[in-house]
Length: 191
Image 1 (tube, rainbow, N blue to C red):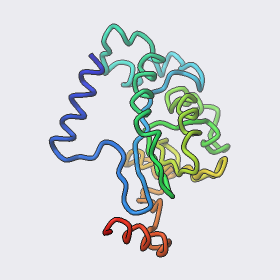
Image 2 (image 1 turned 60 degrees about the vertical axis):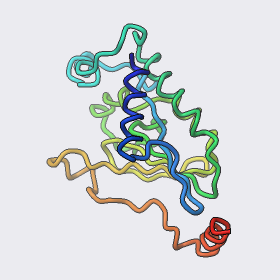
Image 3 (image 1 turned 120 degrees about the vertical axis):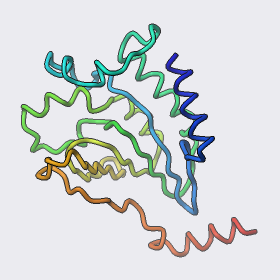
């Protein structure tokens, strides 16, 4: 059922001319990394299990009886993007790929949310994309470089949360900063 619904969503995107896969322009390829939390960052507490909409609002079909199986399904969708090759790769993901992306200043109380922020299994796929810039979602702004990759969390949060977010768009890449590469790519495309 999840596969059928996912494929229906992809067909809708195609029909509406919404790019849902790899987009390459000039020397840059941009693509999604799909995932789901599967508690590799820890087990959620009782409060999270009861209050988090991801547990109560989504009805998964019987074959997806664990978070790990749901995560597997989405990770498998990424395989087709793993062949993207270009000078610059930018991926984006709703989930974070590792807790080392989170600032040290996060309080113990707020760290209780870590189990639902992402999956360490996304990190295994991410390591296949060298070099890359990863744009992730968390509730705290953070830009950090790990293993020659730049990770950007740009949190918009909710309207009341202003202390932890910059609430601004972030430029991830500037093609004008690479005029020689851009010119060479444009010549090749027009030939």
